[in-house]
Length: 624
Image (cartoon, helix red, strand yellow):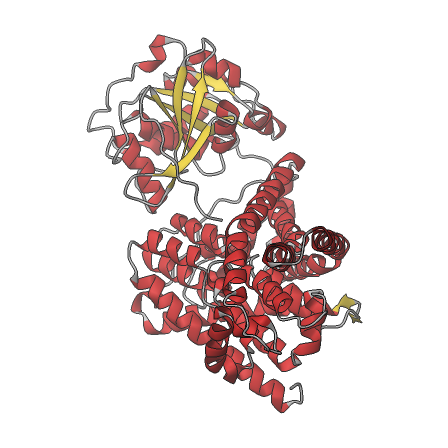
């Protein structure tokens, strides 16, 4: 998913939200701004900025800036550096905040208060949102907001951001003139090292220094974080995910395909014979409909990812995989960006900003495209549906097993590339221990899941109606002109520009079993992976001769391709060179063309080699 970049208004008083990761800061931002949000990038860097419009109780309009989460003001990663630069007034194109809302997690004041003290030392006006107070109370921690305010010397408002509790009080507080006056900057003798002692004294005064009882999350972690049992549970979860992608998606997929076929028939019957009918039926409907049919698989994949994220399980998965990733020169912190890349490589690459080690960050960017993104899922689903029979093996769907194997192949390829980089780079051999916060488990909020799925569906449909439609129409034009000469007996597309281009590319891809139709479909697929399916639909619709009607794509290729060709194309897409949008994201994140060129070259080489070996082995086994 590409970044949304807009111009943001720089006038008016600026309020900055600051807090540790997982303190509920973003939920507070959403509650205070509603739909009045803008997303852009900080000037000169690729870290995303979220700005919104906050209305106070008296109707005053303030600019609210959601700063990246940080544990301290000693930055270790690009996003933490942005937070420090904004607070210090060093951010290019952004003024220093007029006031800071410091969001504290009431369940973990010991760590959160250290960041608050560091912000206060900068001399900025500060108010505190004591968030997750309800969760703290359920754990036996009763935090007195007035007593905490007296200890800190700043206003404290109790909030439960996900339920919008305390937000009106916070808005009313911002109307009070006295909160906009900051205290004096701390004297040089007040070093950050004194924070620990100061926090300890505060907690003792608030009677919050006692050890917490064992929480339900701790008991669950004894099972889910077990080195053997926990890893087995993670493997089973991932396996069931890929089974569900096929078994759950079939009914809605069949409905979409039937609807597209009906629409094509209606359009064909209503429009007169000619180029416009061909454009609508063979170009738009056949191309876009072929891609739209795979929306259910994509939404099922995202559903599981969102549930795992919302429940708090993802950081545990990163911890479980830290040893495995350490063996190839990475840390478990790379897991979440890589998991995000299963949805789309672009947010996965953007998520590497949280990795503090520069070498780990670059390696994670390089291997993120090897995670099977959702754009490849339509290609996999088409080929598996056409060439793998629907039957059970040991109680599991064979098609789901094959899909799981393709995802595993991508993961193993990524680990192999990381291992090679570890062996041939000196910094790759250094051991970097993993330290990360494990949030408490909680039930995923249905509304959050629904919003996430809706956003993904909108993005996918916009791509179908945007770039995929544009490229499908462009391909139809190339495949329809010039018209075949008088007396021609072949399909019209063979005499077109696309036919000539496909015939030329076929010489390059013939050693790996690709015909001219596949070779041609790979070209628009460089813009977006799923476009290849629409391109195949358009090419085969225009390849029909005589009175043949355009058939459904899956049975058509099952008749015309060999199993060896299908397996070769699957192997190609495991390692296929990235779409243009991903390469552009890599260029933005790394600040140059070197890494995108390296990525393109090594992925093309891996894809060609994997397809060649697969095709030749399949031929030797009689699958030609």
